[in-house]
Length: 310
Image (cartoon, rainbow, N blue to C red; front, side):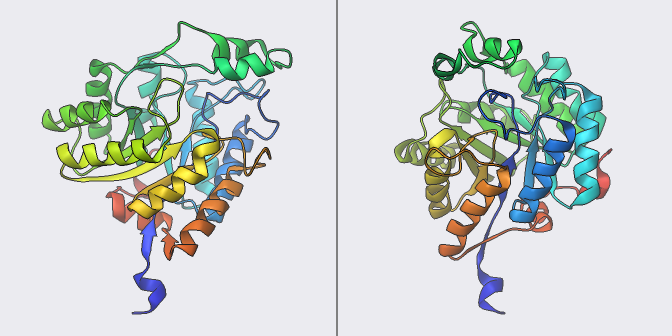
């Protein structure tokens, strides 16, 4: 066996567009179905094994739960590359609209968030309020009463929907206490072990993106959950530094324009692929090899691209 074949493999996820970033924040943010699909394909070519997908209205970039727009995005991506497509259930819409993507598309992977939290980008709005391009952005950035709702009822129903459609849930953990919610779901059979966790760090009311916090949440997970794989997404300037620490600790990494709009000090990233390339380079310097999409499927126990409904 060659040295290349014995290198540790890391799954790199590219979160393409999200819903927190807005057109005013960056001219490079993908908004239309084609732009989102193009960015996903480029991220795959740069080394991402998974792309995490939200949908937006093409006319103004507003986040949407529209299944027709989701279908346009995911079918375009699938027609052009073999990447694992992870569809969000944490985007725009009511709880019923958010989970509708799972029975509609039966994806290999879909997010399930493990707790509610307050959320907005007031600090960004204060800097950009005189430059806003679209009226809807004001509400996203400045609304003080917004709650990102993820109740235990939703966790149960979302977990069941994933089971019924043979979709693996990616459990998103926004704060340390949500590890207990993940354990709660396992104990009641809402999700099956081994689970896959995505630690989301640096949100305004979530856990901070620090090394000490990452070690704490990873250690806490090891205390209460026996079988799991894990990845880390850090918001903003901490994306690459926390990604590097994650690699050193043995985890997988998420980058992409959903989490950070930059690729270097004060330089806007022109694509998620730029950020993928940066973390790939760091991984290779650490003798870690980016996993291919099919290797990621094996590592996470996914059903395969031929068993989705798009």
